[in-house]
Image 1 (cartoon, one colour):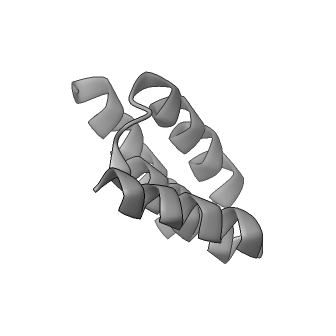
Image 2: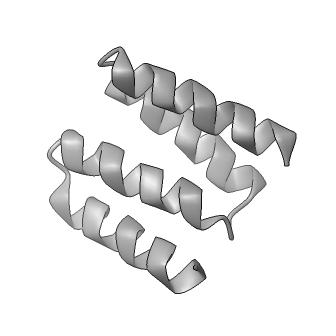
Length: 68
């Protein structure tokens, strides 16, 4: 899905730029479009970890593994 990939790419750019809140919003939008995409949940887990939201991170990473 092109829209999903575009949002993932934008989220990655936000992470690189240190804009983690923006990255989170983009990833939430991507997950709404494609909730069964493990790459999205992996990215959500990574961003949550970097924001210090460890329980959310673990849950998202587990979901990514389940979907893979």
